[in-house]
Length: 212
Image 1 (cartoon, rainbow, N blue to C red):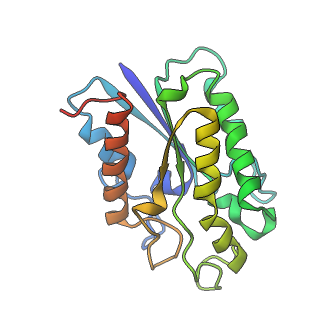
Image 2 (tube, rainbow, N blue to C red; image 1 turned 45 degrees about the horizontal axis):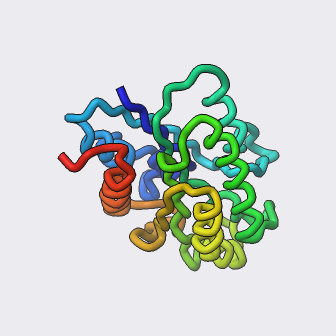
């Protein structure tokens, strides 16, 4: 069986901006992707975590450094055939004091680990959706600032550069989907559906799955 690791934050976990709970599997982009692959011998491994970053520690919520999670996943025998990596939104939080280049360096460190185990042509790096222009307001998520919004919009360029350097595949989620107006941060149901279709087509082009 072919295994595809989908590694990310709350937009991979499936955070529902309306209920603040988790979307059902059939709504999450990872679950939709699995449904599209039901006639193939392929398993989608959902590895999303709310609050996850690339390399930055959250002092109030330990265990969110993505690179540490990636090391644990690949520590020892592994049979993962492909990886979809989408991180960076939480790196934009004010406390991290990051620039797009800083966050790109973090994602590059994550790729350092992944590429020891998975060929570059089977890795899909996704720059995340932009934060909504009002995300920093108190009714949404004041862990972000107006500068955070600007930083999120700079990730596409920097991630594209990293992808080219590393020889991995690249996709900019913000070219296709936007955050829900409910919280300015997370995908709604339609966004998950749209993103699933885009990623599915990309995986076909990567020969990870076939157009059945």
